[in-house]
Amino acid sequence: MILGVECTAHTFGVSLCNKKKILSNIKDMYRPERGGIIPAESAKHHENISQSIFEQALDKACIREQKIDAIAISNAPGLAPCLLAGMRFAKQKALKLGKPIIPVNHCIAHLEIGQHEGAKDPVLLYTSGANTQIIAFSEGKYRIFGETLDIGIGNFLDKFARFTGIPFPGGPEIERLAKNGKYIELPYVIKGMDVSFSGLYTKLTQLYNNKVLIEDLCFSIQETAFAILVEAAERALAHTGKKELVLGGGVACNSRLQEMCRIMCQERGAHFFCPPKEFLVDNAGMIAYTGELMFNKGIKMDPSKIDISPRERTDEVVVTWR
Ligand code: AMP
Ligand code: MG
Image (cartoon, rainbow, N blue to C red; front, top):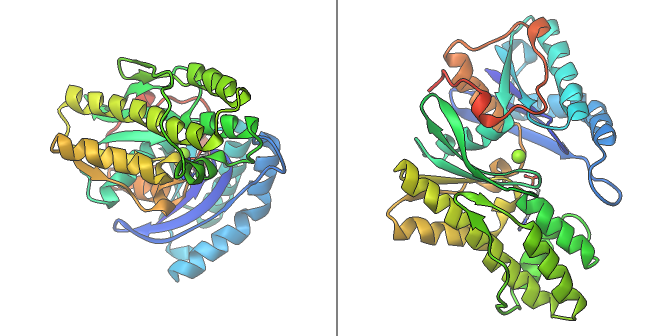
């Protein structure tokens, strides 16, 4: 029985996973009153909510805490104050129960949860607020085949939304407005498997100031930015010879992005896996699930020997559990 804890940014979550079954997946999200995340405030949120989320996760799974064999925690990458809050909580539980800790890389967990949907060796298109990466397993590690050269896709959407007066999170409202828009050509930047959104952002602000309809801008943002992402993912599929694509991250909730991925995969005879929303956004279920894969291969640490790793890169993790 693995207890998973997610704490890297705005979400604090706790999950229980046993034999690849996710028995509970409870979370609560810090919401800034305005603007972006303030790390210290988000950490405070995690501290205040952790015990109650823990109890809810145990109740939902009908499990007593004595049944827990190890605690998996997202110790990397993320906002240091948030990681520290989660780590303090995990250590306190681990010491109380006398159980080891399993350090889980958050980005890798987004990929591993694809197995829960049936993927075996996929390319992950990871599209969240801060992160935009294309990740796949190659020669002992999860390698980053492509990534954003400037801002993450979600931050880009939120930033443009904020510019036009749409509050955070901007992505869902852009999706809604896009339904009544038509296509305008926008800058399309892809370099190999790397992508870039800052030129697109500048162009959009100019068009908005020139009174171009917001619906048309939203429609065209989706068509352009998502086509860039899907093209990068397709290049990674072609390059690696892999036949599976998994989506992850909050922006993956967008139905147009999902549709584009599905079409691309159909056209090249690949399988497309889109986890349910609860596993697309930040969640502890994917941490517990990945933690169990690692634990079963003997990966566990003494609570006194583990630390956070705010800047750990996906390809720094030596993968011994595959
Ligand atoms: P994450 O960083 O993974 O928690 O994801 C948060 C990001 O997902 C924010 O930038 C949101 O604007 C974005 N997002 C959530 N739902 C949608 C959607 N339906 N379409 C586009 N972006 C979305
Ligand atoms: Mg994430």
